[in-house]
Image 1 (spheres, rainbow, N blue to C red):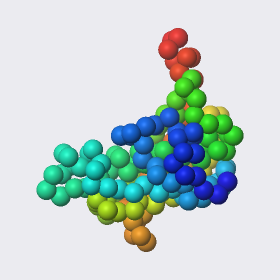
Image 2: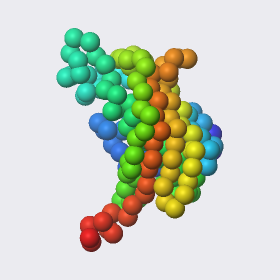
Image 3: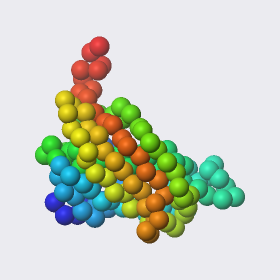
Image 4: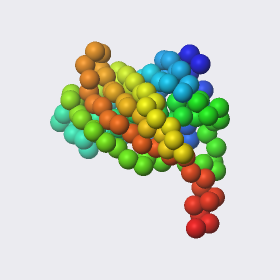
Length: 153
């Protein structure tokens, strides 16, 4: 699978405005890696309070964008799309580093590689870049859970 426009992304991710953090998938190699794009605009809801005098994208939102790119990689690897009966959860975030502020007008490139898949756990390394500069990176651990199973606990 090469690229995805926003309509195709909406088939893979359950997220919607204001929490959808992927605008385009530039390339996706199922089972290996994905490169996605988040265009950061001044209209982002988090800029209202973070910070009004100097708009900076919160680091947790950058990590969320990396996780959404990882979800696209997972779902494309598994060969299925978003389903209301399943939820894609964070299980862990390790080695998160924030190296450059991301501001309004930046094109945030999200490069996520699958490093391990074992017994329902997916481990990724994600790097967020603005141009050639690393803005943030982290190792992400995620899993897929059936919502109906969890509600019946």
